[in-house]
Length: 121
Image (cartoon, rainbow, N blue to C red; front, side, top):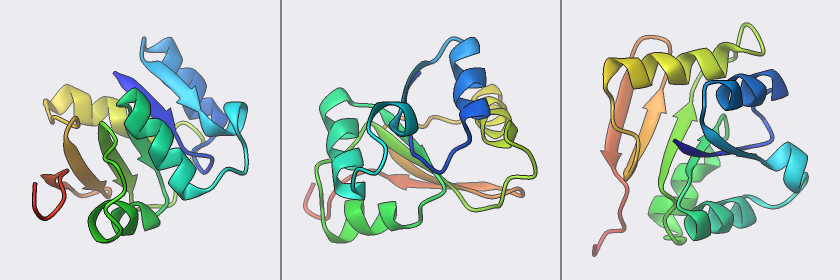
């Protein structure tokens, strides 16, 4: 899976996702401090799934209608360990959930999805 990992995801999860064979770009490593808009532009350009704890991504995609990334996985919980985001993603993948082309909001109880498209698309 092609992932773009936002700065708020611990580097231990970045390393674990790479170890699991994912193609990962980490904003912390590549361009720390860039704007949310720049993160979304990069994800769009490379068609990567954004993994983030940042709730603003829904605003950027659905209200501001920035160019669409490959997908978004917005985690709505505080991690109990630096590896929890990677473990959560692994469980989603194992369950068969499709992340590409979708805005996925995940908490510890469930994952909700909606198509990743603009109003007129």
